[in-house]
Image 1 (cartoon, rainbow, N blue to C red):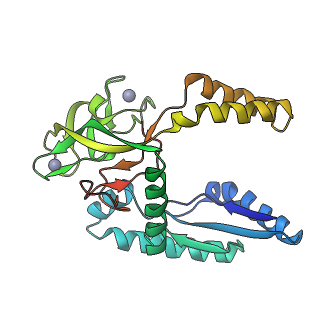
Image 2: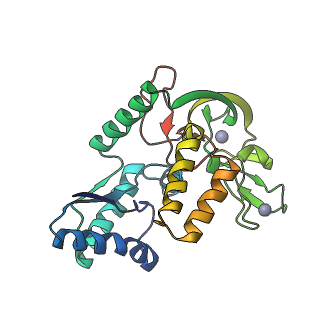
Length: 256
Ligand SMILES: [Zn+2]
Ligand SMILES: [Zn+2]
């Protein structure tokens, strides 16, 4: 039997702590278990070197995204080696192979009709001449009135869209951003609604899952599976290989 185990990709903007290791350990135990049983195991993971937090940190420390990513990636590799993790491949998201693979999967999904373009409004800084990623917009939380970032309010834990913020400011230059229209690709999760419902019904019938797993999944399905943006205006990451999308990158998060 071929077994793929994908460990979570730690984000390369800070050192690992015990919580990371606790979450990653079960994958390593599974990999060792299946190898001992003689199965064909591929246990992979890597450092996530893309995204906004690394780029904000690079700005603050007056260095490059690559320097920050290199530092923590090397630290992670060293920690995993000392702890005896048995990854078959531990790589990084700024690796060329990773970029090419993501673009290939995207183009396959596009060909098969699982992606569509949608126009949305987004904060744009005229001074820095760029669309601002969520965390590059700061302002006042409309829910509790304290200072908040564009993706979430740390004070009241409300998940925010940057346009929800009051007194919006660009994190780079401090100016008030404009609202401009931009276009992004969305993944049609909704196309999988019926298929997912029948999978869960089968799992329930054959008693393959625990009751709470079936209950929780059915609750999500009852709300309707939402489509999600797969591209964003990010400062670093994987380019979107479609004309007209120059400068935009793929997103990994769960952004509506
Ligand atoms: Zn708040
Ligand atoms: Zn600005």
